[in-house]
Length: 379
Image 1 (cartoon, rainbow, N blue to C red):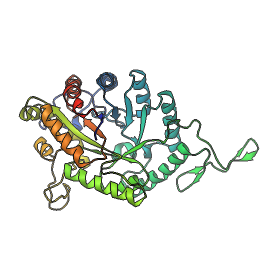
Image 2 (cartoon, one colour):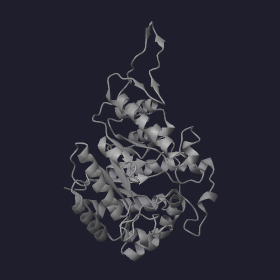
Image 3 (cartoon, rainbow, N blue to C red):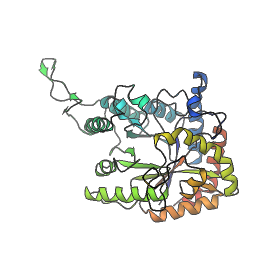
């Protein structure tokens, strides 16, 4: 049953001239005075969510985005600050892009956040997808196999550091500790100081395709599935459950997953779509070139595969795919109820903030959702 309602805010500023006919995504340029506005917005939204009874605010790590779409470079630092501005709300990292970190520094930073916020920061990891970011930090992105190899070794180091009293690791990319003399003896192991105090450690990773699904499911990493069509979500949910079962982790369908969906409330579906459409289209101007259109045709083939559509989606496509829920609270409640009935293990739903919606408008949407939708799912 869905009982935890969260929000994904990737860190966009309030954008001007949005929509398909608006400013081209690559032509956007904002001065630093505008880019830093996202931090005040994060605080304002977090405090509203805290008061309204939401579970978690998820944010996204990105770098160098002068276009204004995603401007948070350090989620652990941001989340730790936001925890001081709120009382109960959790803060999720969606995601710390591991190839741009040293895994020990990420483990240390997360451990500090876990301790000082009393467990209110949730760890998330990803491989990245922006070549401008990952390659600039000296990690591979153009070479997918090299990126995967590096990420998996980094995850091995990260898990050892977070969970073991003392450890060592000797691989292709990391030699931990190096065989150096220290105070008269040769190092053979080290200890992360401090380690997190809230265990077991909850780790999330995006599931964008089947390429990483087995890796995530077999290791007990939870999966975030965001803005997928319902057929793609169903394929992912069943594959995740089956992979976990093969690894000796029997799960209910939907368990250890988070369903990310776009929501816009209005008195009618037509009005909701009319008001949301420019912001929806702004989102896909930026994200569609990265391959983030996870819809399926009537045969279950993902868009972009031979015979299936390959284009920027319309909002009507998204509503038909059940990736976007638009209309009065009654329609949204019915769709959520139908969805949770299909996935008895699913307990988390995340609302996606379409990148073109102004902060004040989105906050009003949160108030309405909390008032007229969330009470239907209080168990």
